[in-house]
Amino acid sequence: GSELGQQVVVENRAGASGAIGAELGARAPADGYTLIMGNISTLGINPITFAKLGYDPVNSFDPISLVAVQPLLITVHPSVPAKTLSELVQLAKSQPGQLNYGTAGSSIHLAVEQFNSLAGIRMNHIAYKGSAPALSDLMTGQVGIMFDTTLSAMPFVRAGKLKALGVTSPQRTPAAPDVPTIAESGLPGYEVFAWNGVFVPAGTPKAIVVQLNEEIRKAMQLPQVRDKFSAQGFAASWNTPDQFGVFVRNEVDKWARTVKASGATLD
Image (cartoon, rainbow, N blue to C red; front, side):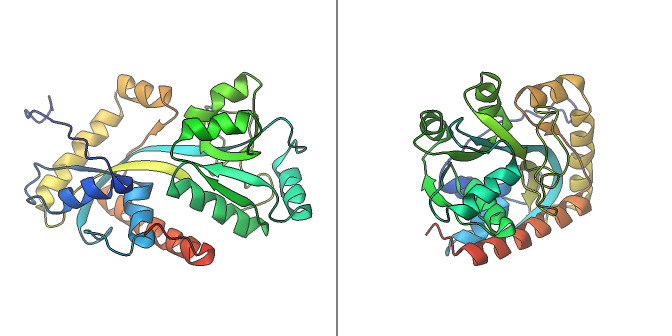
């Protein structure tokens, strides 16, 4: 706002995994005055799991930049007899369909389904309406396994209430430097992380797209911004509109394959 000489108003439109807000943004005038904060669910998964949606993840928006990424953490209750991710896979193979895992959100559910597919295992899915109740049941042993953000799960790992077996990013995360990646643990090619990025309605003039991208680049370099993201378990990021567009298309394709393999639907 200070760089552009404009007041920036944040308008939260919750509901339907971000679909309500994204649809409003897609229908806004393409004049650069409406920006959309999209994420893995809104742009990567909703278009595949909802039969009717008021926007297209690729054609309804012009990408500006990625701004934040955060890996998921695979945690288990201390009673689960697995000290490593490979031991968890072997345990699941020896007890097909008997291990329960909890999730809070469609993107995390599909992250586990992709993990199941690559590992050749089958675990029983328990859906929760939020991370807090899922973590509560995990810590009491009602479910044995959970994929969640590092921000939500690491405090319980540090307190010794949960065991961390792996992170879903391609590299280890500073938030949990001692926890190996899934690729390190024997499943190369697995890569899932929560992400957020900025978009504008399709057809926004190129000059405006370039200007907004440059202002985001400068903002992401500010120490106070990076520190704020880091405190929440995210890494501040930036890329060009073209790079971000390729990233989004790859996410849509990846999750389409995962949804098809799992048969998941939210409608």
